Image 1: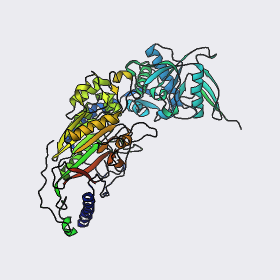
Image 2: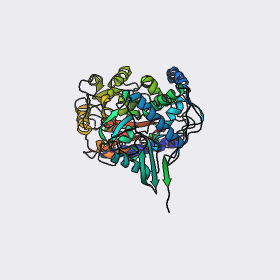
Image 3: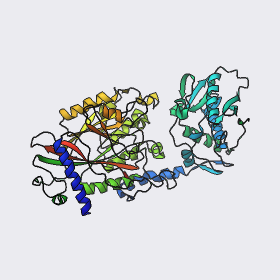
Image 4: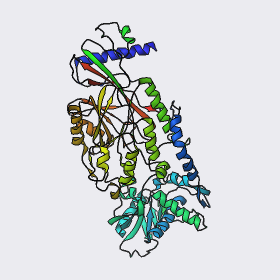
Length: 256
Length: 315
């Protein structure tokens, strides 16, 4: 202890000597060896006054997070090129937002990395929705012509697949080989309504989605997470369950 | 916010005293030319992101870490050790846990009031519930919010967000100015309707100059939500520090940078400006100690010295 103090004083002395020679601001001084590693915090004491403020907020929140919103018939998993979780989430969002906005939505696209956890078979509680989509990204509807859709699908192919609804596509050696829109097999539409997130429209995950005209924000800037919650609650209210499955919408072909 | 701890008066020590003697005189004044001394401990957080509870024990990155009750206990233990501290936050107080979705930031501000925060700046996420949502939070806060580079027009924020504040602490006058990031690419237009972003560097420096010259501040801190550093030319804390003359310390946020220790950058005068940022989520508390001494028996403003770079503290 004394030694430590001694060293501190010594350094302080040098520091003051330096100061007296030069009146400019100088950075000097020891760096005490304080515990620093995250996850090994040695400070676990809690302030009871703070805890007393939090408790009345925490309890109803925990109750709400534990609320069952829907049931799932199977595990929903993350996979590439297609996973049962990604296909299910994009399908139910497309259907929910079509209903909410009274707009036919041709395609729903989210990125693989954006779905953060998998969902189990059985009860889906609200905290799982928050864990799946902790981000505050908002749903947006953009309009794409066929070239722009193809551009998006090329990016998806380069990444080895993605959660997507309304599209069937083939990826050959990391390249887009063929594609079609479920609701428009002959690609006759001038513009497709694409439901996605602001994150992806703005260049997140290296997707910078090219589109025509104005971006459509949803009522109340609906978040992706809130859209998912609304979708699964509606399914539950209709007496139905989630049926996560892969339907082969993205085929990966490997040629020698 | 007045001086809460009287500094003990001591007789000056002559040069050449045995070093051992120095060891028993904490915070000694060395040499006759030094007249006064003051000490200041600045504690800071950034990017709370509504992290009121610790991370879950099964969190892959931060298992069981953080938590407002622990943050507060740590701050109180430092107060016990050094007396009064200056407690600051660099924005993005809200958004990121269901607490914000459910309670719109009210518990976060109540907790900061209780912890004794003295000033904060605005982060982009603090606009997530629009201007009205932010007004409510500022109205609830017992501490001022500062920003000098947003032109708030007639949104109402112009009346409640201040360009800067002066806080008297430990017999010193501490000027605090705030700067924020361009909100337009980050938020829906309706959330920031009527707010104009201005490039922060010149505005912040001229406000810092005013604080030093007109308000007679001993130290000027810039609370920044610009972000620590970018690979392109976008304005950041490093750009701000290097392109100004009157800011002494930049306490940053936004990029969630876990700086291992405060960084120093030369400003336009060649003087070193300190920058610090402590990650996010209240996982760490930043601490910077200053030691002020007046020199040469003049009545000049004391010159600030960074005495110790303490590493930020993991909670």
